[in-house]
Length: 186
Image 1: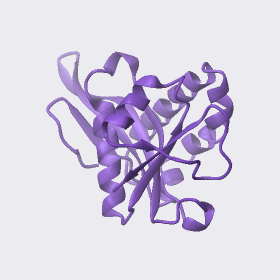
Image 2: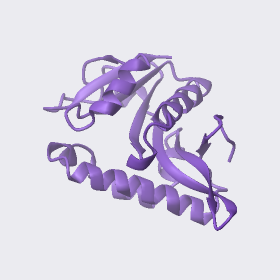
Image 3: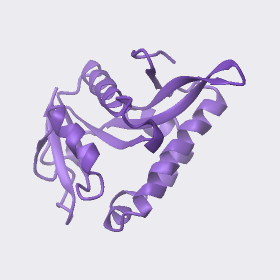
């Protein structure tokens, strides 16, 4: 695990060598994201279906698709000793062009951006996205896509837009009602 920088927040990639407690912490973050999504009505039908499978298969559920799950951590004091606390996560994965009729370039996709409510404002979301963009570019991707429910996740959408993501057509099949699609050239 290698930090990707900041004074307070560090972004680490979940690897096959990660300690079991680190993998379990990442799994819990994904499931917290899922619990949030379930409270958002239409969003639950949109992306919750595969989440439990992804969480159970960590880290291979992202590594096996040419991507990774990134985790934002901060150092905290616990009983006077330094410890690391996980505060957010974001997955990214490569998708083969045949599955993306409208995205023929070497494309990647962001998945499951989540920052703990009490940790928002530390710039962890921006750092997670930037780390994913950098990693996907290094892996040969020329574009990053994402889909989201704008009404349920307005802060995330504002962050995506501020980082240069622009609306696009549905890229993985038929457009779903209420779902917004975004693309960024890398």
